[in-house]
Image (cartoon, rainbow, N blue to C red; front, side, top):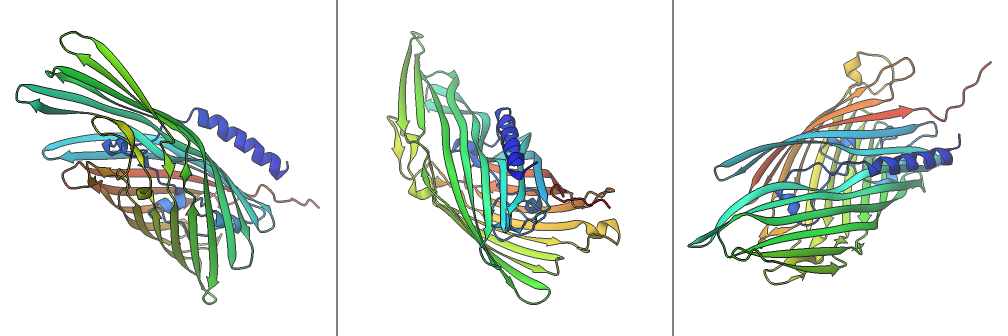
Amino acid sequence: MKKTKILGCLLMALTTISGAWAQGGTNSPYSQFGIGALSDQSQSMSRGMNGVGYALRQGNQVNTLNPASYSSIDSLTMLFDMGLSGQFTHFEENSVRRNASKASFEYLVGSFRAWKNVGVSFGLLPYSSVGYNYETSAHVSPTSSLTESYSGSGGLHQLMLGMGVKLLKPLSVGVNASYLWGSIDRSVSPVVSTASNNLTKSYSTNVNSYKLDFGVQWVQPLNRFDRLTLGAVVGLGHNLNNKMSMSIVSKTVLSEALDTATTSLSDAFELPLSIGAGAAYNHRGKLTVAADFSLEKWGDLKFPGFDGSNYKMQNGLLKDRMKVNAGIDWLPNPSALGGRYFSHVHYRLGAGFATPYYNINGQDGPKELSISAGLGFPIVNMHNNRSVVNVSGQWVRSSADNFITENTFRINIGITFNERWFMKWKVD
């Protein structure tokens, strides 16, 4: 079967899967802000290294963080990588403590070499997720009180097709083109109220747009055993051309009368300009040390907001987001054969820090501190040991002054199928 036909069949399968894809994996109250909790875009290999990837260039793993890496895949390899995750979160605010758990299918990606020096990748990836349900109580006057319920669901997803090209021996470039789609629904409604009027507010939107990301990698040999790879990525910012609607239902306690008002804002969401850079050092194929830095210019964008009187596009609701990650991968025996099984296992560690991309009532949202550890187990069978099961654990602490503190422990399981689909067999 020709490679183009294989790719067409796989894209059709991904489209079918996306129709049944469950909404994203979060239960954080902070996902009510902006477009939700931004998803980790990395795959199973780099999850144990806390999501680094701009300069990773390994032909036996898919790395969608930098499309220039696709050109490293050899002519015989067909890669599939799918990931699942489960998480447990502990919420704490003053003396109130709650626990919640969530499990979800995260991504499905694949990659192969289309022509000499040209690699292709495709996949289904999350972009953001919204999922929360909680209540608050407050006194609105000395004689009246209000208990409100806050809920939200949905998220944005991307169906991606990418290409990486090796222009020179040390230089590769690439591009990811994604169809970005999804829906977000939020509501605020009274549960118990002694006030004279109750207001129920509902927000909803649907997104159908695109996303473009460009990447470059430079591989510099240092000596016979060491090499340094530099990588950079740029994501284009643009308007998503979606409409955000807010409906307010006013109910008078005495008369039980209902009054509904709906406001719609065009061009409500935008993607920010994003830039990232990273470096990775590799020694003898055994040791890889990598670090990434990224900046997303959310602060340049307006976002819908209700100021108590009007629903309108506002400045100051979003802010620039910075993220720093670093990780290490150790493989005791990089040779394909020989040695004990655990000498062929990858051992990984990572850590990171990220600032929020939104403000809460004029204050900064929660900062994130994270650490991770992971293992990559080769699947040994009678044919080869090229496929890998990657297992990683990550702890993330999200905290801000006077707001909820979240401690999340997340387990990621990814399976990378690495098969020689295009090898020609010769029979004497």
